[in-house]
Length: 279
Image (cartoon, rainbow, N blue to C red; front, side):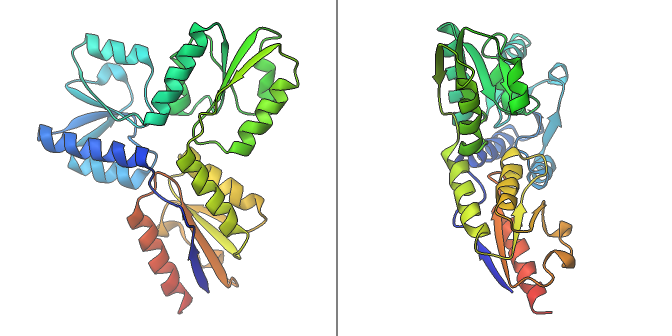
């Protein structure tokens, strides 16, 4: 069986920045620091950093000393409270998430009711929602019933979504007949490039393997897009999730990875998959 890799896969610049920031801070402090939530959605990376002293906490009230703000960002009121309590903040928020936060704040200032096409439970979306009052999250056509009947709408998107999904949802909103809509594309080009490369590869192989954390939104989106091409698709965290049946009877396998998946996981998987071929 032939193994092919997507031309774009793995770490994006935002994830690399967050990890470098964490490692540099740990080295400078010489001791444990806290991370408010997982720095990225990859359990293997989180585990490696925990061994170096990065402790994940979920309750802002439990934070003391120095805290790392993860790549997904945080709500402004949480940051203000941490500063009030004298906590040292090290900000590893992705620059594209920061841009979305700023856009939302400006939309609200200009009188728009903000709508985010995204998953309300996703940490990036939760953080961005804090930058404007009464933000509406809608990620399915059914959820568009949450929108007001009229008024000015300002629309952005969760950075890890696909352009096609964003376009479909915006089209459905426009069809509702609003007099004024402002749409800003907040999608990440790094994620988009990985999506395009994954779809291209999925059309050429007999089976696709998408590597990355099960909580990673961009990795889940890669798996969904690959499966839409009609190819058997398996979303795995690493080689430990692989079973022989996944590759049985297949001649060509494609491999891609989410933007929070480290290179070593991809390399280990490909090496083992090639060894599996020779059995």
